[in-house]
Image (tube, rainbow, N blue to C red; front, side, top):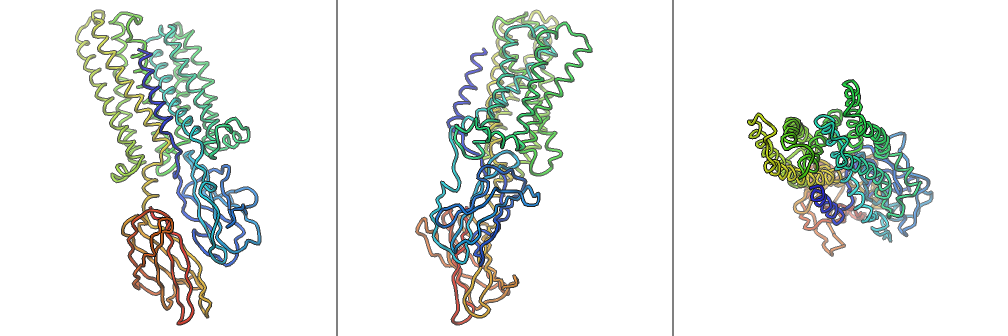
Length: 565
């Protein structure tokens, strides 16, 4: 039975290796300085990017490229004046005119890399030789696959370790001295320790886009240890070292321990379990977003309930109910009866905490069906529903055999039927754990939907060359998605106030697909404010050409990049 149960995890790991990709876009950019596409008269001394949550600096956190492709940033990126949600870097003095490109790659609060780029112009726009592979390296597929596998193994090992240890402690003390139980618990502890160390070594290359060869780089490891996830991982390793001592006590002294000794061991085990679960909660999605103070204990409770349930089922399927297992069929059936109400309580806790987590991370039906996170969550909910159905079958078995007041009369055929049902629960549970690992690696639906919707704003300075011909054009495109979009254009004077100009014309061009120019018919909505409608058929970075005429002779055209999703 144990060999059969190991087949599904092996298949799941193979699937993870084949489909693993990097996770991006957890933190969202809210502002850049200079603005995306902005034309400035004088070269800035510093460029910065501001996010909607704190981010950790990583290798290549903020780089600035000249039109020729040469780096023009100086020193190391920093958090200005202690603002953890902002990253800034100095640039060299005396920049020539042209288009400069700024690329960032940082670690969001939930431990995943965030990357992107924007451009600004000094004096006027120009051609640029910077390519996308230089700006945002995709990273190693090998690192991504191993990283995903390590996270899955950590979840599965934690569940088996906690649930199996509790089962032995509460309902089968003499099982602590059996070889099969020891192998299962030591394997679970080793799997969690190795997977945790693996994530610690791989987080640096994963976050920075390095290859697998940098996994043992001490400089990369030091950087990882300074992040929130790095701190959580080394704390987990310390807790696992203490858990090893508790396992040794369980193997050698549990059966003969006094009541006081058992109570002390139970308290220590509970603290270690909560502490290890908290290392996931405090370095993942629960520590960001809304209602963090409530989300953290809910996430810890969810993880502990999952571990008790699935770990206990694994103990039943792999050892207690296997053919030739120790004890009579009646004794084994009695252990199932004792575990059943605990399993039901765990299911109730999982449904309650999972419902809250789903609402917090999704927030709307459209996000549930229209984002990768939402679709993964739907699959997980389907798996949980199957688990509940299989659990109901097991409880029905218990109810039927409970009518027989002599537990010794439970036959082997009945035990065999129950074993198959529990093995089915474990198999589905493994799939649910895999989906959980995938959810941890996916942007929350709220974040993904917010990033995929809403207006996009940009600006550019203009100078027609005539008297009073300087100012700024600001544009907002809403919702900045393929199809129909509304364009708001504002003309600002030198003081930053909206000012009416003689004439404004605008058109969109997508050079990469040879589309355009597509003219935008503008109508006046107020002094210095025009509104127009555009139909943009393809996603990509469009160029909005805005021609500003300030008198009968003087005019100029500025190019503003607009990202259409």
